[in-house]
Length: 225
Image (cartoon, rainbow, N blue to C red; front, side, top):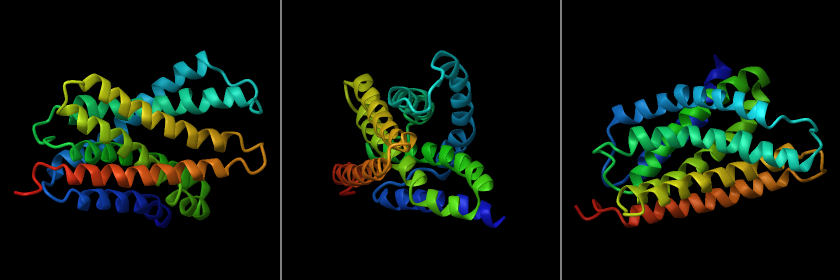
């Protein structure tokens, strides 16, 4: 039970932070919970299906090949996982009438991402124990949050733009790039010291995420109401 709480705690902390930052027009709790659950179950299911195809089409035959690890990080893992989240935000959350300002893109994308991260984190923590829980609370879980924020920033803009498809796909692409970079530096840990690149990409993602949140807060149409 203690490990389960440790796995869930960082997810709840991030959800609370993002919800509090929605300063001017809160989203319905019901939609937030459904988005989280879709991320926790449907997104995971989509990823597992995609892994079957990509694992067969792009087999990893040499774990010390930088090129193969690049493909593994950016396409097999990052694109599959971010696409699974994107599908839910795009076809479940974005069409909702309550999705009525750009910041909502961040809210719903993070809820879906945290649903995914919660399921993933529980599996890793139950297997790896206390040290894994502490490490992932400050690395993998915040990383998933930044991927969600960056994706949601553009999907929030897309809802109210004539360039909807372009902005939606920009969000997916940016999330995939940051996710891929984070994983790639971890995957090539056979190169001494290279893992620091993952933490650098996470820090850059956090900085950009804070800026994205502030930009949408500043531009909220509910700000002066």
